[in-house]
Amino acid sequence: MSKIKRIPTPFSYSDAVQAGDTVYLALHRGFAEDFEGQCRNALEGIRKSLAHFDLGLESLVKVNVWLKHVSDLPRMEKIFFDYFEKDGFPVRMTSTTEFIDEDCLIMIDGVAFIE
Image (cartoon, one colour):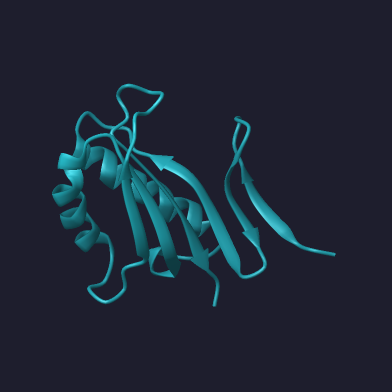
């Protein structure tokens, strides 16, 4: 019998799901007035979700970053250096999209590995 752990939300998705030695993170968006605040808030949300599984950001192996404006990419790059060790970045795919919430500037999802 498989042991799957979930962090539920009041919505139609889980915040994170652990299946075996992998944790899958749903979208994490930031809530702030500007891009930097939203980016940092999203990463802190991911950190909080991973803590439910006794993991830190260093356990992330892959992230998908969705930006509203491609021009925010250089700022996102600088912020990632504040959250990850120089040689400890997860693999990443970054793309732009239009969000349902007009005030949303960034969303991040990802996959973490449990050693």
